[in-house]
Image (tube, rainbow, N blue to C red; front, side, top):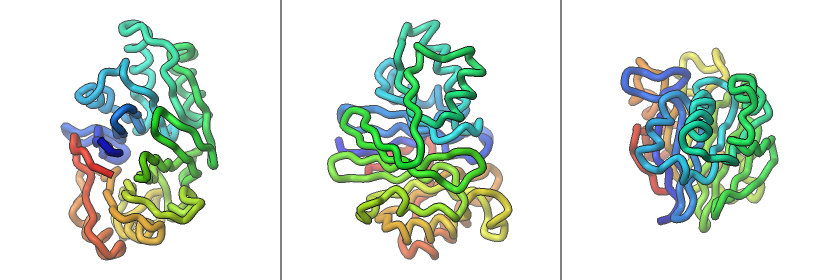
Length: 246
């Protein structure tokens, strides 16, 4: 098994009927990382891996559609599964929020607070973080394994570029980019349109592009077509429960 990720949820800002907010399970043969923990993804991640077998949880920022399963995960680990020192790699804002909700989540969680420019490893995965263009501290992440690299934009406006995750200029095998807003609403919120995601992926040397964080009730195919025109190649929409090989 090489590097791959499974979509646990890909709805943007809130979940539509039967959907979940942002969350992905990133895996190699030996390592499992839950990336973003939006509402609905706690149940979904357990379809693929037992909670006790997770090596770490990585959360990009403190907005509720990306982090609010953390207090519930803490309850499961603390009161049912008797797990301590689950590694949670995230921003200071997420730690402060979850500690406020949970009344101090340690020692159930072993907090690993990162920021722009931080690097770390989880098992055989290497992670690098960069600051995005979003109202709270939000970290994009590049995840590398055995020469294959996934870039995840998290939430961002267009003042962020994938080059911030790529100091050697090698590009990425796959970019998982948010595409929240319609092209006509570019600039109205700190999010990308499909067109902007395509521009970002092309400029950042992404060899494949998958769109995520899609707003319920909008037209995902329109986002995909706009992204494809700007990217200059095929673009895929993230689909719940689907696994992508990086």
